[in-house]
Amino acid sequence: MAAAAATCGGTAIIDGPLGTGGAGGSSQGGEDGSPVCVTSDPVGEVFECGFGTTGSGMGPCERRICDIDGNEWRSSCEDQGCVCFYNGSVKCSCALQGEGTFCDGVRPSCCPEPFPPF
Image (cartoon, rainbow, N blue to C red; front, side, top):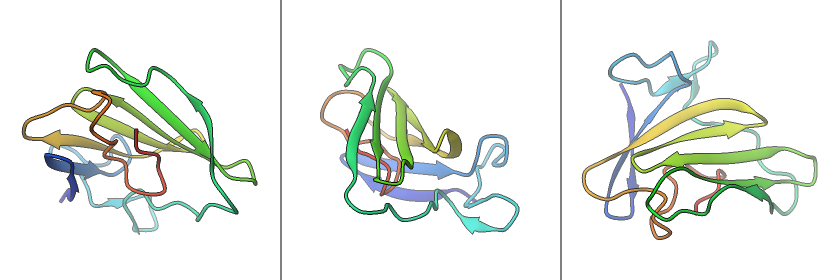
């Protein structure tokens, strides 16, 4: 079953890694049964380490943060959903349920912390 997360003005449904969730998604990711989107904790302060378009409600947007050990958390979104990457690997995806859009410059990513919002 997919996990739900509250977002600004709607609900996001978080699925496990692509291909594991089927039609309903999955609240578990990976073979070890670890919870959705779990990554190692950032080491030291995190900092902005790259971004794509910052959002205008007209297509994809992306934001990346890194820690001092070189780990990278990336939120890559389109109007109705996001894919959450950790060190280049998909950890989960999430979709907006209800009204609104991501990439509008107002609504944060639906990827959970420590993944970056917008």
